Length: 320
Image 1: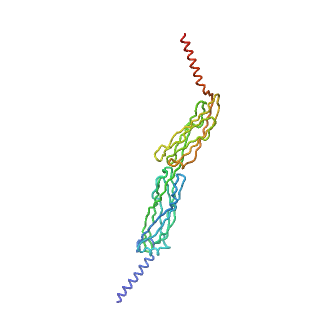
Image 2: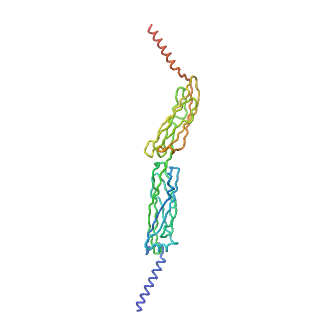
Image 3: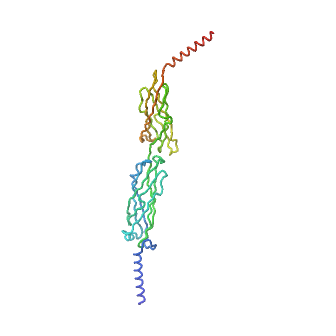
C-alpha cells in the first residue's frame, strides 16, 4: 500500500516537474507540444499602378499590406500563450522583376503580433523602369515574404514563404535626338537653294511620329520641310533614325542681293498609336545668307541672242 502511494506521489511530482519545464522552457528548444502553421497574405494598392510608369522620370511607390496569422488544432491556446511575448518576423525581398525594371521593398523586415486572426503591417514597394521598357507593356514584380519559424513555450509555429505579384505597366517617353551635319548656316546665290540636312533619332521606347513645321517665313523667301516623319523604336528592333531636309529658296528678283534671314523649325514627337500623347517641342534655328546677282527671265533672252549670233557666224563661214 505504501509502495503504491509512493508510486502515485512520484507520478504527480513528475507531472508537476514536466509542467514546470514546459512553462519555463527557453525559446529555441526543439521540444514542442503544440505545432501550428504560419499563414501570410499580401495585398497592394491597385490604384498606385493604374497609371503607367514613365521610363527614367517616374518612381512609383506601391503600398503593400502584409498580414499574418497562425492555424492549427491548438492555435488559440498557442496564440494566447505567445501574445504579448513573441512576435512573428517576416522577411521581405524582391524575388523577380523584368530586366528593364528596378524594384525595392522597404522595410526589409516587418513584425506582427501572433493571433488566429490576421494581424497586418504596412510596407512600400518602389518600382521604376528604364528606357528599354517597351511602351505600355505589362510588367510583374514578384515579392518574396518569409515568416520565420517560432519556437517558444513548448510551441512551434512552422515557417512559411509566400510569393506575391504586383502588376503594373510601363509608360511612353517621347524623346528625340537631332543633329545638323552641315551646320545651321549657309551662303547661297539668289538663284540657288540652301539645303539643310537634319538627322533625327528616336530615343523613346515606342514607334514615334515627328511633326515638322516652319515657324517663321520671311517675306519673299520660300522655306519647305516635310510635315511628318516616322521613327522606329530601338527597343522593338526597328531603325530609330531618319534624315529630313529643310530647303530654303531666297528671293530672286532682278538685281544684286545681299540678304540674311533666320528661319526656325519646330520638331514635336508624338506616340505613333495615339497622337494625343506628345513630347516637348524642339526648336532648331537656321540662317541663310543670299549674296549675288539675279537675272530672272533673262536667261531665255540671252539664249535667243546666243543662238542668233551662232547662226550669223555660221552663215558668214558658209559664204567664205
